[in-house]
Length: 516
Ligand code: NG1
Image 1 (cartoon, protein in one colour):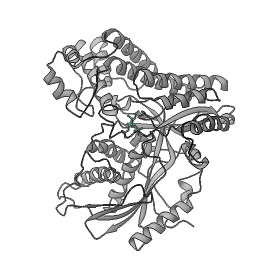
Image 2: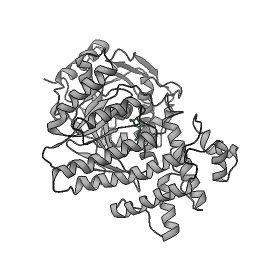
Image 3: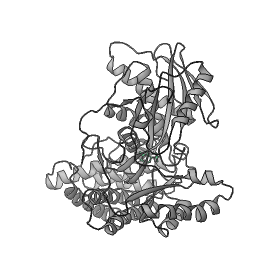
Image 4: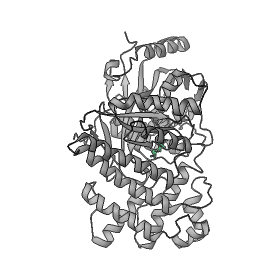
């Protein structure tokens, strides 16, 4: 296993062959360049690009600081850029659905303003611009940096709101473009990832760090083991060889789920619920936990560390699998014992569990970001998190030390993916009927394991399938899902919904000009 421990830099490449291996992208880059010339009168100086990702396993646990197993895909967001003499960020998207946008930069060097209530596409660019600007100020503490104007054309092949992380891909590419145009020609992958991780919080989404890590660190033919503790570390690993080879089919349910707009009942509510679970456990077992979650509370990882320190004098868990397995199993057992109200807690009940008033509950948890709920599902969310973190370790172990026969490789990995889906559906409530239907059809047509991937509530699913069954699986989904649910779709639209992509390279700057 190659361990990325150094602060490797984000690469700069001059050939598209260094970026893509499946689909010829010359025509696409030509078209982006043509649009740029048409709109701005000359060719772009460079392009920054960052890919989407699919998560193989480890869902809704990154913001609790548990490790995840995503891979970058070849679908990406490309931003063609030229420095301008104006104080404007001019953004044009090749997809007419996203209207052109112009942002006026402050001549005094103030950060761009981001309206949390407005999740239009330009806001995501602003998130990337803002964190890059903060970085520029950090490395030049003696003066306030006034960023230059930028003329840009954006082109994306990652479907929006689909769980393949188009937002992180766009923000990473935006931060990279902003840095470069303002004179930063080399940036480490760790620095770019770290700034991108916090950037979406400016739009009020308290995301974890999985997507940005996968987008920046992506490596062709490798999936990534992403650890957040004790510090961010991405370890690329290859899939075991088997006969037939392993392949992953990604199927978009075409149920649109905008993470920003649904945050109060979906994504951010989950962040609040797992934080509450961590604090209730800490209160019951009388341990102090670091207040380092996205909303400034404790995390379930923090509780795990504090519990073993108090009861065994144990050092923090360093990621070792056997020890992690023991600790996570213990955590799942405690969750089952401690949380007696399996169907959820009212505000009053949650406050009692924490030994605080309802006003304090509001100040520390419920008022940090707008949330709406009937009951707080503390038990179910916490159980999912600890058990899913355990499944990640089991999946990684199978990948690195596979059973000798191929059938067992498929059944072990597949069963973990199925368990993950079932937990996301019943404990985390982040699946939906359409995704459940897709997974059911897939399992009956060659998939060894099927699950919702990404934030969920719609969006994409991922299926582990022996390569020789991939076509059978795709045609079953075409006939039994897409043609039934969306009878108006053309064959081409259906093809696009079935994203088949190899693990690809992460963020980079392309300076090869117009491709031949
Ligand atoms: P997507 O699928 O990109 O919305 C989101 C979060 C991840 C992670 C997953 C669930 C962002 C940018 N990404 O992913 O950090 O928590 O949900 O595992 O919010």
